[in-house]
Each structure stands twice: as structure tokens, then as C-alpha cells.
Amino acid sequence: MAKLYFYYSAMNAGKTTLLLQSAHNYRERGMNPLLFTPALDDRYKVGVIRSRIGLEADAVAFSREDDLFECVQERLPGQNIHCVLVDEAQFLTRDQVFQLTEVVDRLNIPALCFGLRTDFQGELFEGSRYLLAWADQLEELKTICHTGKKATMVVRVDDQGYAMREGSQVEIGGNERYVSVSRKEFKNVFYAGKQVRLVDPLEARPKEGGEEQEEIWGQGEMGSE
Image (cartoon, rainbow, N blue to C red; front, side, top):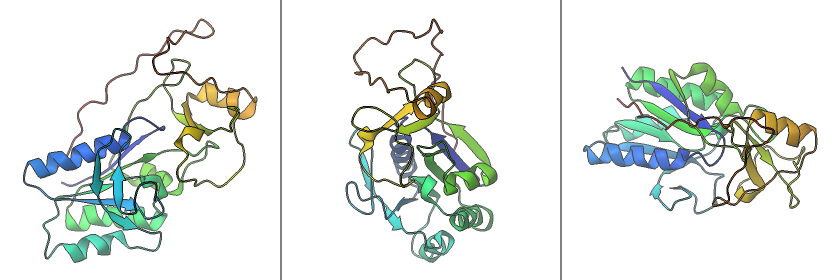
């Protein structure tokens, strides 16, 4: 049985890298994945999925008005599709998440969606809300906060490292303005006005407040059908 998967995390947890690796794994086995990416994501080129480590692949660019079920169905006669992969899935609409459930339930094609769970204000994105509600399988991809705890949320910061509390939910580009933090640190930064301490990746990370650093487990093996 095909399933709808939602792989979610804070930023910089390797979601796009994992998507591209999954697409490679399907192709390596002689299977044909169909990749989708939001048309509004034009950081590199519309219709291209690119990871921070330089991997990239062409994809179908979709807008909020597109019917993803119809898009998959119309390609089936000339293209045997074995899997659907969706990057930046938080930008899906409610209807498009439903359409992906139709891809799974009516066409028996697994759909793997990768995206953020919450925005810079701690609110669920529309696509993430319905993926959390309707996906057959949820998988959290782990990343770490500068405090040493697991990062589960994202803040948007200004040039001085202070959280921005207002603004559009969608802001393409400017990844350096977003910082992945733990829930506790999100409250300190977003509500209490604490300045984010940006840490160089090679810098030793001292424990704060005597708290033990949480163990961050590996991603594990992705299931596929």
C-alpha cells in the first residue's frame, strides 16, 4: 500500500538533501520519481530543487492554483511514476494536500513531502497543518539549537540578532536571517527579547545553565514503497 509521508523539521536539518537522495535511490533502481517544488521559490531557478551542499535536480514548479492530482495523472500515460516527492511542502494549500492523498489512495503512488512545521512566529504553515493531520506517516528530522538542545522551531532575526515578531509568513531567500532553536530558546528570543547567539560551526559550544546537552539521534532509514 502506498502512503503519504511528511518529513518535517526546523531549518538546516537536511530535508532537501534527503529528498534528492531519495530521488536518486529510486532512479538507481530503475524507478521514476516525480519531483515538485513551489514556483515562488526562485532562489536558484524556478523548477530547480537545490540543497545547501550543492545537490540539485529539476522539478515541476507548482503554484497555489495547481491541481497536483491532475498533474500526476496526466503524466501517467507517457511516464511511469513510482513516487512523488514534494520540496518545501509547508507551502502547499489544504486542497493540494488533499490532492496528494488522492495520488496515494486512487493512483497507489507514494508521496513524500519535506518541509517546515512552523513559521518564524511559531505558527503552523497551512500545508504543514494538513500534512500533520492527514499523512499516514510522520517523520521528524533532527537538528540542533546553539544551546545544545534539539531545535524544533525557527526565528527570523534582524541584523543585530533580535527576533522579528512581525512580517510576511513567506520570505524567500535570506536564509542567514533564520535560526533554528529549541522551544525554550524560542520563548527567550521571540517573547523575552533575548539576542540570538550565533555560533561558528567550528566553535566549541559550551553548555548553558548547567543543562545537559540532549542527544541528537541519526535520521534513520527512510521507508519507501
